[in-house]
Length: 294
Image 1 (tube, rainbow, N blue to C red):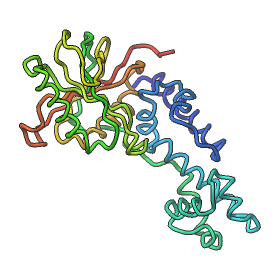
Image 2 (tube, rainbow, N blue to C red):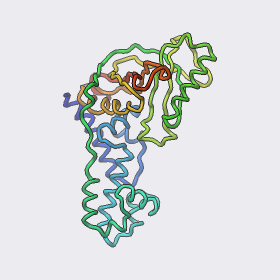
Image 3 (spheres, one colour):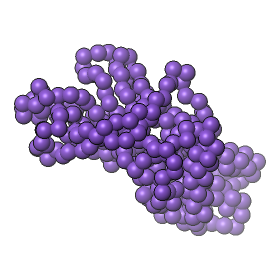
Image 4 (tube, one colour):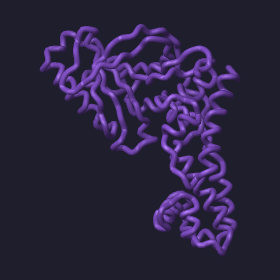
């Protein structure tokens, strides 16, 4: 355990939670919160979720409910006024969020004081999260030389990634690049849990070697060039989030390493069309460095 690393990241996230709690009526952007935390926007949302057990928007919804429950204790305060005070544009939007978060309407829960207090106590406590990863998880820190990939941006749900890679590979075949093919990579820019589904960005990447130029609207990206914490995932890609959360939470905060301001990436070691999902291997590369980043 490296106490200085753990304290640094926990203090940064505490600053963000405090900021959200002080102005629940506002809706800060992920970029704004990343700046408050002094964590690269490439990593902030995943660090936050791994440490707190909820997304920034989840924290905002929970703390809005906490504030609303306190305000409901005043029987003379109109529910519409409470809705505006905690950041909702209408009493209808507030009532919908309130019912989803508590299982009751504001007017009904206001009359059930004991129930209101119990729900308030529960929502005032952040969710508990596991501090250990699976037993088989082994993290290595390696140094990589920079290498070039050709990237195709996918915007939308991750369920569309197989089709995106298929279309990308079809372009490679048409361009006569298959003989130069060296590897399959992916850069999960956004966490699907933290952004709207249709706004989720993911870069599909192929390594064809240094001499290949992009075409068809694709672009060059460079990966590597520094230290990376690496863990291997075996199985369907749906299980990758568990590894991400462990790397960004328990491992990072106890490691003595700090994040670099470049994205993490996945290296898919097999073509998923040639093997069953339980045999798919993925190496996750988290960019790190010794000593605290500025």
